[in-house]
Length: 287
Image (tube, rainbow, N blue to C red; front, side, top):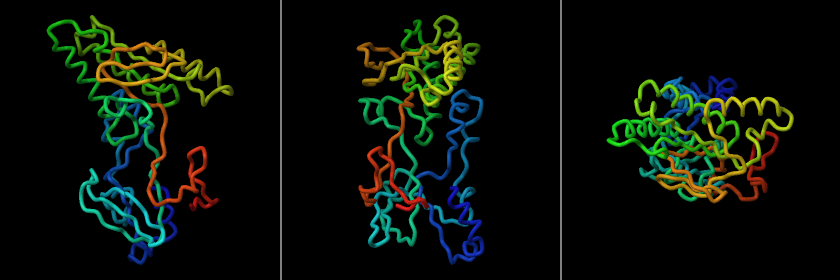
């Protein structure tokens, strides 16, 4: 997005005339601003207000609703599969210059059951789906003929970095605001559990900003969030999670914020990846 804005400033007439053609390949037709996912979860901002259509972000560019599956650098072609689900037509798209901007995906592969039963922040509509799941859980508890178990109103957030802390707080706010609308919450207090593998939340702030990190931790616990340190998810099932301390928590939903993984495009050389997982580039970000 930022590269295209700069390109339009540098070559506005060429793009307008069509002598320079830009094709944006994306399986999604809108861009979601991840900085507002916490506000969307808490219900402070409608999900639609955090999304912008790609055709508005890339005026003058060709928008292709497709998924890039491989690249052949020798023939300068990208193989794409059309359709949002990648099940449409497959063909090769020629290029003169290729910009790879996949971003990152949630690193959920390492926890058995997390992809199947959990929710994440980065996938398309992920945070809205988790919010809907939480509200559906409240609806089921409200219409049940018997008092719900504690697990039916327990939600687990995995990861104690910036994203995990923000979304645990947003989830607690969502449940607090729901108390006036759901009678079941007057009898059963919902539980929000934040599991973090480290010995303190917000490790990116430490040690330089320990006071700020400690203040945020106190505010989180004051909001009713139960913090489990030195504890990581071992597996996720439909109705419970297993933790690294050999305990289980019955729960109605899991939100993963345990970090991100690199999206691999076949055809890019393996030698361009550093041991830390980042792509090696020149000072102009060329591979």
